[in-house]
Each structure stands twice: as structure tokens, then as C-alpha cells.
Amino acid sequence: MTFAVMEINQRQNLLPNLSLGYHIRDSCDDIPVSVKGSLLLVNGQPETGRGASCTDVHRQPSPVIVGDAASGVSMAVLRTLGSFSVPLVSYFASCSCLSNKKDFPTFMRTMPSDQFQIKALARLVHYFQWTWVGVIGVESDYARFAIQLFLKESAKYNVCPAYVHFYPVALTREALKELVNTIRASTATVILNFSGESELQTILKECMQQNITHMQWIASEAWATAKALWGDYSDILQGTLGFAIRKGEIPNLGNYLRGLNTSTVQASEFLTELWEETFNCRVNGSLNTHIHKEEVQKRGPCSGKESLDNVYTSYADVTQLRVSYNVYKAVYLIAHALHDMSTCVPGQGPFQNGTCGSLNPLLPWQLLSYMKRTNFTTLGEDVRFDENGDPIASYDLMNWQVANDGSLELAKVGFYDASLREDRDLVINESVIMWHRGNKLEMA
Image: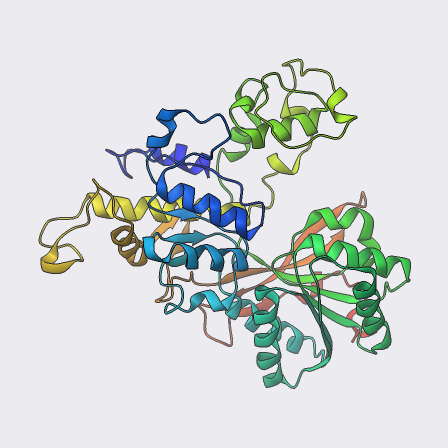
């Protein structure tokens, strides 16, 4: 996000007479924390107890919020901010329920609705003639709505669910046993999971321990490119198929991310934590407020010679810019809407009597109106939104393959494009797929 803001502020053909600013808060993937942070943003207030001075109180309120990643958290924030009419642009919340403009009139997203992902998954299962499929998901709005849609969509192709099982976010021993017993007892060898990588990790660990390693996994987009799962569970996940959101190649982002040094990271507690964990040292004057373990507090000071050029971190890895690309597009959506407002000709505006939107003060409801009308092109992609504020869906079909050195190779083996007609929207290059047990017939 900060890179996109910097890039826009340096451009002469987009918002040439205006500069974007931002506040960043950590939602911690937690509803109370996210709601509190959102209220602070729209009121322009700093968080108390964090060294805030009187001058900080007068910070500019945020007329738009980029976030949240989770569908459930986004819904809670939207309901809380309803009276403010502040637009919320999510980069990862995919629940189809958020397309309901009656309940969520100020919501937009650069993440496709699950309505399209589900159509793609149902078509995928039908393509390979898998008619007996296990379906599991974490207890969440995301998984419940997605599975409901999948059962309805897949029934059109005579696909039957061998079982449908929901498991809690915090998997107890009993809940884990019940889930794994369900998987073991079924004759289905294809399993579709709707969750994030953290919930799935516990399940995969138990499957390894119980030698349930013969399954063909189908990933929801939430974990379709989750490289962190590969190290311990490559034997299970080899051959996994899943639709991932569209990847972007953002020029100069890698250099921007690697350009950090010990001095610059001190301005952000997020970057300070990254620096300390990556180089096993302590940053002087750290703003970091998270609680360190006792042994971590014994770390020596950073030398100032540390460089991200010399180590691998997922932070600086720009090979799979998917969620990050959605954030990038969210910032550009806001910028293009503001640009349209700033170039509006009086008498030709979208409001009563052709009036234009106000830039000073900037009114959130007017900004939202411009955002809903905005179409733009970035990095060669035509970004458009439907009447529900949802982008036109496009997914890459990913296959988890073993590279020569044993690492994970996320191979694109097809795509789904909702803008194309039905006989052309799904393309699969079956010849390049690496299957879990060598070939598809062994699993079907």
C-alpha cells in the first residue's frame, strides 16, 4: 500500500495537484481490534496510551478504508461504520454475502466474490469427472457461504458430497479427531477445503500422523498459494489443485521492499518486528510493543549492516503478488476516483443539478459514488466493477509441483475468466499437471 501511494504521488498524470496520505493500523484478524481501529481512523484520533501528543489528535480523518482481509471482520466493521458512510475496500474478503448492497452499501473490493470461485471449482470437479467429493471448511461466514454455494453449483454436474464437515477455528483434540475420522471413514479420495493456511496446518499434521496421505486436495483461493504449508506437508500436498486470484507483476516493488535499513524500519513497529525476527537482533529505539520471549530479549543490537539483499524473506518475495496486487489495485481505485472528482466540470457532475464532488472537505459518500463509477487500467489489466462493487473475476489454476531441489513450484496449469462465455471461461492444460499419485486415474 505504501508503495502504491508513493508511486501515485510521483505521477504527473494522476492526481497531479493532490497528494495521498495514509494511516495504518493492525486489525490482528480480530473483530474488536478491527472495529476499534476503524473508528479511530474515521475520527482522526490516535490510539491512546501509545505516546500520542495533543497535536496527534487533530490528524485528518480517513474518508476511505482499505481492508479488512477477512469477510467476517469486514462485515463487523461495515455494520459499525454504517452511519459514517465511509467506503470499505477489501483486498481479500471474498464472501458472496458482501455483495448484498442492502446490508453493505458502502462495500467494494478488488477480490472476486466467492460466487465466481465456486463456479470455477464446480467446473473443475466436473472436468475431471470427480463425482464423489469430501467438503470441509472452517466455522466462518466465508466457508459456510462458500460451501452452500458449492453444493448448489456442483449438483448441476451430478457431483455428490461424500461428507460436509465444519471444524472450529481453534481445533480441539476432540474436534480434530472427529474431522479426521470422517475423512478416513469415507471412500472419497478428493477433498475440497475452505479455510486459511493456519487452520489447515493442524489438519495436515494430524493426517501425516495417521498416514492419511493418499488424498487429492483441492484448495480454496485462501490457501491456493500458501507456500508455508509445503515444508512439512509436501508428501500430502503434492498435486494439489486450486484457483488463485490473479497475479500481478509490479515494477520496482522488489527494490522498494529490499531498500529498508536499520534506520528506516524504526518508524514502523511492523517493520521493526520483521527486522528483529529476520536478523535475530534488537533495533535501538524500537517502537515494537509485542511481547518477546525471554531468550529473544537477550538479542544483541543490530549492527546497521543488515540487508534484505542477503537473505530470503516472504516479505521481499515478489514472485507471487496476488493479495498484494489486490491491495495495489485498491489504492489505485481510490486514486482514480479522486482524480475524477478533481477534474469534474461543474454542471456535468454526478450529483443533483450536475454538481461535482467536494474535495475540501472530502465527503466519504461522494467519494464512494465516484469509486462505483470508476474503471481504470493498471499493469495492463482492465479493472472494472459490477453493480455490487465486485471486480470481474479472473483466476489462475495452480498445481503444487515438486521442483528439482524439492521445493514447491506453483505451476499455472489453466485459468478461469468469468468475463468469457461459458464454453471458453475455463481452460485447463492437463498435460502439464503433476498428480499426487502419478496420474489422475489412480485418484478418480
